[in-house]
Structures are given as C-alpha cells and as structure tokens.
Length: 79
Image 1: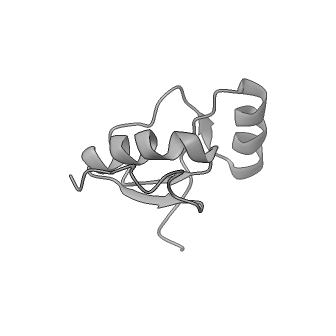
Image 2: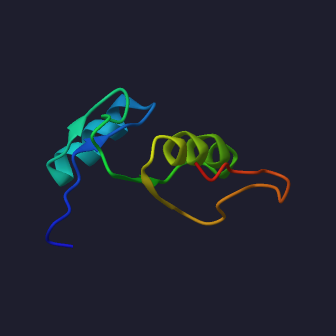
C-alpha cells in the first residue's frame, strides 16, 4: 500500500536482519518501536502465540503467516 512502509526489521539473527533491512530500506532494531502501528510475524510457528499476544496487547495490527498457532489450546488475548 502506498501509505505503508517497512520501518524496522527485528530478527534474532543479525545477518538476516541486515540483509532484509538492506533489501527493503528499513532499519535493524532490537525491538519494535512503540509508534509502529502494524507488524508482520514471519517466525517459526511455536513463537507465534507469544508474539501475537505481545503486539495485540500493544494495540498493533498483526499479520502472521499460517499456521498462526501451533495448538488449538493456545489462546491470544483480544487486547
């Protein structure tokens, strides 16, 4: 979308973060800045529940690759 831009790349692997940031013009950051309105979660499935919960509670829109959760008993708060 023309009004959206990638501003930050957060990844536990610094070389992967640098590669994505370089390809997209974003910055490598240790955490997501507070003023970010939306996040894309593209991590291993077992990490999704905690990351979704963190960003939903922070009031962000969340796009997550499927499957969103590893088990049906993983519950994500609705803010």
